[in-house]
Length: 155
Image (cartoon, rainbow, N blue to C red; front, side, top):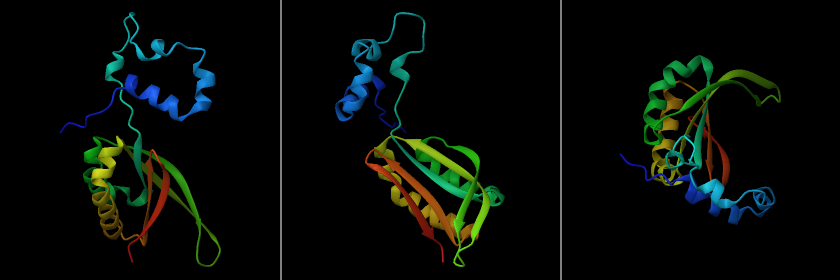
């Protein structure tokens, strides 16, 4: 499956045109120097891709093992994921803090991939929450237009 990833040399001019505050920094460089691979033996810049979108699941650490197969299925269109341990906290119905060790599982992909698979990610997140017996699953969605935190109820 091909993702039609866009090379960074084609993205930099567009990023600069939409972020004028970056131009103050970039004016110290020649745009050609950034977008043209140097002649020195370095990695081929045409193989660097910008993955401008992401999904991040917030999963209780003690339930990650049971959630893993769901994560693998939902992450497959993104071609991978990474996971970090974190501490999550929220105020419960009695106005008391609940703290819990969680895993933040993130998959990065180009926006068209996230857009194409969003319904499957939402449904898969719901099914995962049910399977691991959570009352809700936290899912962050980051796309070029912004970042949203969804709390997907499984009740």
